[in-house]
Length: 65
Image (cartoon, rainbow, N blue to C red):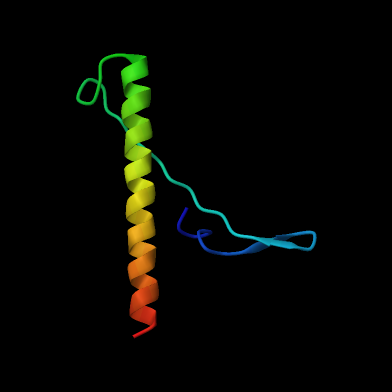
């Protein structure tokens, strides 16, 4: 996905930019039920989003030095 991340694209007059976050949960390490695995994967996705935001913020700060 890195090939398109951050690359804006146009739909009509609108310029859009997308990104994705993925949460991974492993059976039986993270949970042993489907509900538990979904919950663990959801929590992992939010950790990934937070980390991505922190990295992007650091990159902006470094560019502004």
